[in-house]
Image (tube, rainbow, N blue to C red; front, top):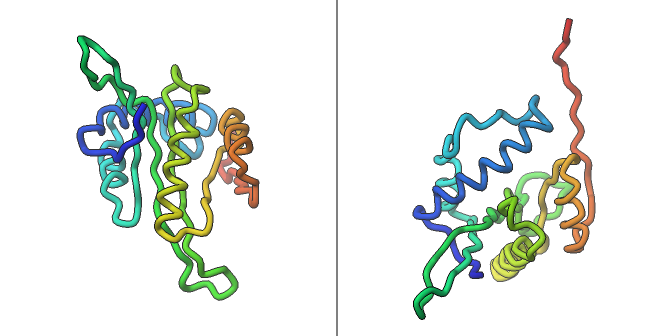
Length: 169
């Protein structure tokens, strides 16, 4: 498996993986996440993530050896991240941090170390670009992701809470 920078050629695979996570998120939090209408409905969003000026989009690509040569098979995961820095809020630290946007591993390939390798690559990139920490959000329903990040030494520092104002009859 190789961890490499994503290109526009990876968009179909990224959209396929994003469809998996978007379907799950919309099932658990329909008030927050719109159910995807089809694979690729969010292609422009992921294309922007690939080309983010202060960001990175990495893919995990598996290779297959056939007839004595390596042949690309498929993208089995991806991660997006961006560098940020507070410059306006006086009571917050001014250091650069890396905000991880999305990490998706194909549902059929989870628990194979792919997520750890993608996150290690993001961490290496963040350090090389002066970041002092990594930050990310995890939905409360996503127990597998919560366990993964705890195993990777992430600590909960905040809880985003929500209250519906929609009144049902």
